Structure formats: structure tokens, C-alpha cells
Length: 269
Image (cartoon, rainbow, N blue to C red):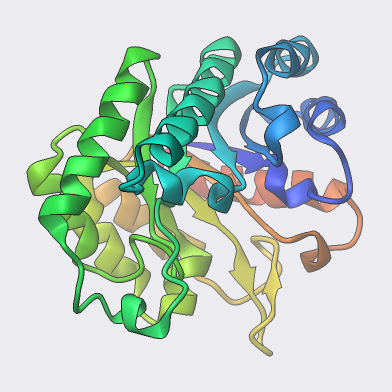
């Protein structure tokens, strides 16, 4: 296993072209790049990031998902085509950056009834996912569905249903979102199993506030052992909000903390 940081952790602190050199200077070896808006879904911008990433390996790209991902499932031909055009731009960025994975949310469950999933049409959903997987494959990128409380994979069971119909689909475990969804992360981990591509982590303090790994009460040692039990050997990426920590050097400390645990339990690369 390996550690890393998502540039989402520096949102509103540093632009991506500033975040990557900062993380590289900290000795961070792996990163997810959070492309935040349409002007960043551009090949020229990706080449700029590639020039500035230093020794960092880009694990994945992540976008501001609501901008076009829900429209990939739209029944209107023009809306759907435009969404796929934007998807291809992002996938070209992933290619340029050498990122093998795309972090995907999918639809937005805006209405409360949709969060219950009673009307989920998995046949229709799977057909949409197959198209998206095909688009990703054409650019050499794997589609990775993340558990997110307000989006497609908002509860345990969704990934399993889709995986039966879309064998190439991979998963992303987000510890924070599992907590928000009120499903134990262990259940998401069991469902994704060997199809888990990488993990987003954060910590939580005694008052229930998010913080960086090592600053709270979350048992990362147990998480690492459970990841090992399912044969996971990917990246554990810190994804925090900008207000969850003080100095930016704390990201390095948190990354080092996770690295020490991987070494302790015999899972370090």
C-alpha cells in the first residue's frame, strides 16, 4: 500500500498548479488531482500540471462531479452528448497526467425519496455505466465509483448490484462519506472487496469534527489490517476540507503518520 494526498485538501488554499509543487516539496509520492472547473478540464492545463508535479505519481483525477456527471445518464441526446464530450476532455487530462483512475460520483440524489433508492432502476443505471466505462477504456482509464451519501452509491448494496452488470467497474472507499451515510465503512469495504482501487481517508475528533489522520480518534491501524484482508494494495489518499487543519505542513505530518502505520503492519510499498 502507499500513501498520498488529494489536492481537494488544498481547495481554496492553492490552485492545482501550486498544490502539486507544494506536495512534492513535502515528499508526498502520490496524489489525486481535483480538477475544479471547466477551464481545468483542458489538455493544455493538464500538461501544465504534468510539468509541475515533480516526482508525484498521479493516482486519479476527480472533478466537481455535479457539473456534468449526472447528465451522462440524461435521456436527452444533446445533453448526454455534451456531457460525454466533457468526460472525454477529463479523460484526456488523465492520460496526460498518467492517472489510471477516474473518481466518479454519477447522479445526484437531490430529493429525499431518491436517497432511499426505492425507485432505483438498476437495469437502466447499468446500461449508463457500461457506456461510461467504455468511454474511459478508450482513454486507458478505469472508472471508479465512490461511496457518497448524496450520490449514486449512497448505501451498501448499490455497488454490488451494478458490478454484476458492469464487471469492469471499480470502487473507491471514502471513510468520511461512510460515516455520513451511517453505514459502517466495513460494509462498504466488504462489498467492494478485491474491486477496491483506492481509499479516501480523514479523521474525526472527540467532538465529531473532521481532522487530519493522526489528529483524531479513528482507528487507522484496524482499517489498514482490514484493507490487507481483502488483498488491497493501492493508495490511501488523504482527502480533507480546507478548514480541517491549520498549517499546510500538517498534510505532510498526516501522510508520514499513515506511512509509519503501513510500515508497522507490514504493508508499506
